[in-house]
Length: 190
Image (cartoon, rainbow, N blue to C red; front, side, top):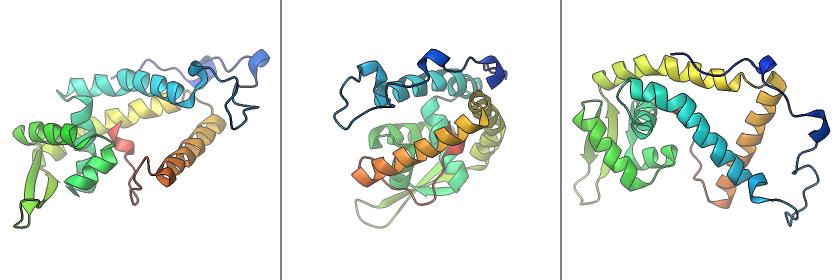
């Protein structure tokens, strides 16, 4: 699968005239920020475009939706994962995770089982041999697609972006908007 990204040498850097971003002299009130300069707008635009450019092509090649691939990758990485942990790690709502798991289970890619005798028993998700085999086929394309996009940036910008995103994730976890996930890295899930 070939990605449409080029090496960072061929992508123009920010112009010299606009070396200062709208965020450079930002005060706590956000005075002067336009909606186009909001971090949430930029991250949403870029995230959606990258998903369409990188993840959708390889997921569709293997008959998966992006949601199916995300859950399959998380379960394959963990081998066994509680439903509640899968919801947290996928950053999806319970209903979407439940529907997607039922589809993956019907295709023989995951196995679900409940533990406990109460109506609210804990549900566990397990990768099946067939799911593991599919994951093994898709993950090299997923990694290559991610690397292709990341390598558009020079090394200094990659490191700065990674550090900034990790710091923003920690900020969101501290505010309670994003649950902390112990040691969870969903790099495989696109």
